[in-house]
Amino acid sequence: MSMKVSTRQVDGITILDMSGRITLGEGSVTLRDAVRDVLAKGTKHILLNLGDITYIDSSGIGELVSAFTTVKNSGGELKLLNLTKKVHDLLQITKLYTVFDVKDDEASAIASFTK
Image (cartoon, rainbow, N blue to C red; front, side):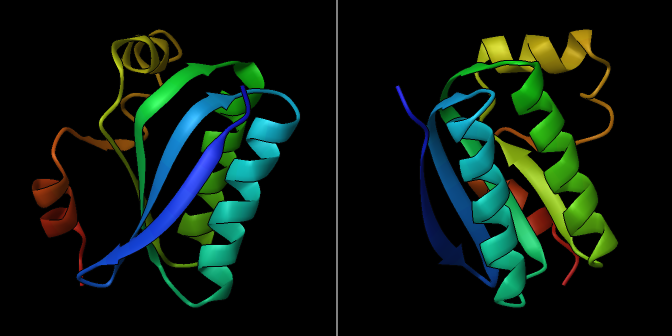
């Protein structure tokens, strides 16, 4: 199953609703391209909604870290929303849970961005 991304705007925040698997190859390329497209449009506040992500492999984790770094280096903020239990546990195991700003509901996630 390939990964799908849909983009929407809420209060100046770009939300990338993702579904499927973030894996080596198509999934991680899709994530990378989506984040780069948003940055290219001048948006600095990105929220990755991972509620429908079923699986992330090590390449996908690397791509999340890379996206986070790219956005931060551009002077922006990248936050994660709606982690599934699998993804949450994976971020805990890899100690990346403390690196990312993770939110459980969209309203508080949008309010947490510095504008």
